[in-house]
Every structure is written in structure tokens, then in C-alpha cells.
Image (cartoon, rainbow, N blue to C red; front, side, top):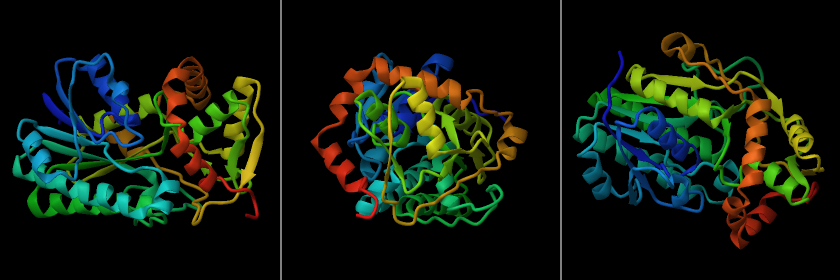
Length: 334
């Protein structure tokens, strides 16, 4: 089964992964009619879509009337729209509940009403919670431990309920930590890179031993598109590299690439998950997807992108950004 989709509504398409996905569609499937709906919160950037021939609508996925109107003229929704940062969810859980759970319900209802061919929900490996041993598989129980991951799991449950109750052709992707060009500089790799470029210390929680699976955004976008076109309705698909990297190792790579940078250990985040690990056998067997960009290759190109695009990220490190930064990265023992 391969869906030949011609009119795709990409929600959150001016954000990091969403904009990279829209760029990929423009390169690889220029015949597809794309509409981007984005609220343009602090992490959304209209400039991320510069040079693309797409329709842009400034709006919120929680706006029932707007979403209904847009959905009427499309045959699929790909939802990237979300509050995504664990640290911010610990400071302001309610905004995550609104967007990541209620917003998904609005999209599901629109897909149901207008009989869309598919609704793809971009989720996260964090819904599985801390994984002390083994690897998370799609049928595992979800055990989220932060407001962010809990609201993403809530959105997943709603989407699956719409599939079971109303037959909405929902598919879900659970991607690992993603990095690459145009990522807002509060996330881990951009924090390390931009701090190193500015001669600032590189903050790592506790002792820097927490491990993550870092996947380049191009690989993530290819996984999303494979699931969109060929995923089985009602199913979730893990996507990641199955390579585990600690914060210490990651910071070491950044300092090696830039020739500068010093680690600073900071107070641990509440409820910190120390390991995520995905089993990606399902997407590999069923859809033929595999990651193509190694961490060293992808990190080198990402570091170079931030080095060459200071005009993009420097304005984002605003007074609000530095206020958040000081609240979040506290000295050990504070």
C-alpha cells in the first residue's frame, strides 16, 4: 500500500522538524500541494520556509473553526505542531496540555469530518519513559514521566481512540532526539554548539551520563514520509539510529569540531529520564526505512550550519531566552 497524497496540511510546519519536512517535500515531491499552518510561537520561524512555494497560514491547531476550514480542502494532515521541550514543560505544563493533547483532538475531529486519507501524528520516544534496560517496542506500555511526554502520550491515546471509534486512518511516529539545521537554540545540540561558538560553558545535567539516540532531521523526515505513505492505520512506528550517546560524549564531539568549549555540570532536571532506547525493527521490516546519516557526519554538518548562520540564531537568544536559560541551568547544589 502506497498512498498518493496530493494535498497535505502540515501543522507546525514553520518549526524545526516541520520546516525540514516541507523542504524535503519541495525537493522530492514538488507536485504535492502543501499548506503550512503554524502559530509562530517562540520556536516557530516564518523564515524557515523562505524560498518555498507553499501556502502559509498563521494560526493555532486549537482553533476549531480554522482547522476545519483548512482540512476541508486537504486529503491528509501531518502534525508537527507541539510544545516540545521537557524543561519548559516543567515550568509551564498547561500550555503543553492545550497544544499537545487538545490540539491533537481538534485535528483528529477535522480528519474524521472530512474523511482524510491519513492523519499522521509526530510523537516522541519519550512517551516510553526511562528505559533502564532493553529497547522500547511499539506495543510496550507508555510510561511518560514529564508533562511534555505525558501530553504527547495523551495525544497518541486520543488519536488511537479516533481510529478505533470512528475509523480515522491514524498513523503515529515515535522519533528519537532529532538535530540538524534550523533547530531552536534551547535544545541540547544547539545549546552546546552556540555556547561553544560564543566561548560560554557547555551545560550538562548532573554528571552528563544520560544517554540519548540522536537522529539527523533528514533521516527523521524520511521516516515520517515513509509512514505517511505506507504505514498501517492504527499503528505506531519507532524511528531512531539505535546508537546511544551520553551528554559527555556529545559535548566532547562538539568541542572537538570547534576546537573550544568547556563542560559545566548543572543541577539535574526533575524526573530526569536517563536512557531512551528504541527498537526500530518494525519500520525497517515493514517500510524499508533505515537511518543514513551517522552522528559524526550529521553533527559536523550541523555545527557548520550554525557557524555559517549566526544571523539566524543570534536574534533568537533574546532576553526571554536568557531568562529561561538562567532558570533552567542552575549550578550544582543550588
